[in-house]
Amino acid sequence: MTSNPVNSENMKLEVVVLPVADVDRSKDFYKTLGWRLDADFVVSENFRVVQFTPPGSEASIIFGQRTSSAAPGSVQGLYLIVYDIEAARAELVDRGVEVSEVFHAINGVFPYAGTEGRVPGSDPERRDYASYASFSDPDGNGWVLQEVKTRLPGR
Image (cartoon, rainbow, N blue to C red):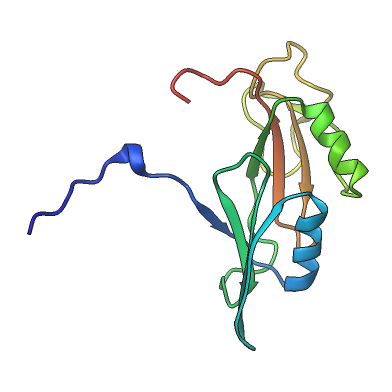
């Protein structure tokens, strides 16, 4: 029996597991974002899996009871690509989510971890991949909105 070589064209990020402290609180939060609830499996009183997918995304998030050994809120830098950063931020604010103001990176390339090096407002040249806003879920897992109108070639 021969095995097929790994075909990198078929490697797709499908799921990101988020560590959370309170499954129902997290479920309510991600519903508030307007994300699609794909599953809520209660396997036993000690094991539960909840899956959500952001609008337009092929990748999903999973959280629940005993789905991660990481500390709740320890996942940072989860990027959501949006066409219009101001409109995406406004929609989340309208849904009751606390979202940072739009910012760009002082280094002009990529924001530092945390809030260091943030310059208020969109990128002055409105370059793709250069304007951001951020928010966290109730446990502190960190999300970043990034504006991209035209993707780089090959994306």
